[in-house]
Image 1 (cartoon, rainbow, N blue to C red):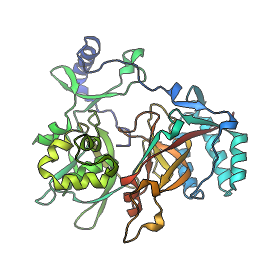
Image 2: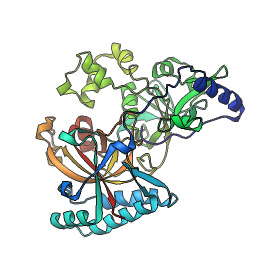
Image 3: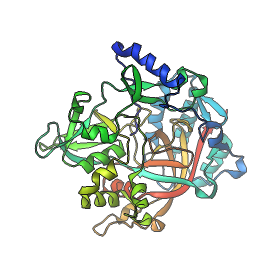
Image 4: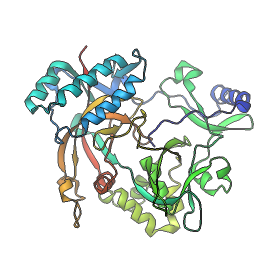
Length: 415
């Protein structure tokens, strides 16, 4: 779910595409209804006076942070130095972001004391707080890179395809047609009878017997539930019967609305809110195969994949670092920027035969410097953040249960 999709437009439908766009936008076909976004960049971050800075520390002793900082540098160094990044109402250039990261990187490499760290940040950095920080209202969830059994070819065991990006999927930037659409998401659809219409929903795709002619499968899985959760995570590893490992990554989506099946199961009183987790959803689906269509089709969004070496990669095109890479709403927060979070994580020392506690009140409070290197369809608004947890058993547990309130801050070097 966490890499940007490329625009796929065939030249031989260009004329009909333009006609379809015009009909939809200016004849009021209802495909897109202009409205003011609920959250804006200007209101998403508040610049703090020094006296309101949080107490900075890193409970992971800066482990892995240098790697995450270096990967954001890769991103910024590919951009024009004049490219602008918004921290609430304030604007900084890519060149300034490079100086920000290099300054922070050089300082933390010396493993500074907490006192020195706080003095350094107060003297050298502006700190911006998420608009949702009051009363710890930023909700932190987690994601990880799973490994599932699969194959490059279908057979009686491997029945569920991971589709590549469909050839008939088109992407539209509404801001190209009118300034009043600036700030709105790009639209995805297909051309049908000289009109652009929404792309096929999850239910449509699942019942189409010839969808492979639109989107060639990159792999096949043995479990439909595995495929759904792979879509949620956005990337993963496929282990073939020959013990080959295939890395698959997010290539795009159908553009349909993302709806949480966890929330749906809570509303239907199938799983209690306090017991909700990825593990609980998986168990419910496996216990109720006769209702799988009902629940999975509630989420109309469908994710397409591509194979790559390395990864997983975030939306800025760099490899993610466990517990140092984070996904936020790309519309509101500056990509690639350094962040500071107060949240909670399970104790990795308790990962044994008895398992770690699912009681979130028993998780250790942590303070971490992380990098804003990813985004996600379900990560919307200033009150949401998704922490990449890794690919091991600890990551699976933490990501599956993480649902913690905390605080989120962004840092940038003072000019």
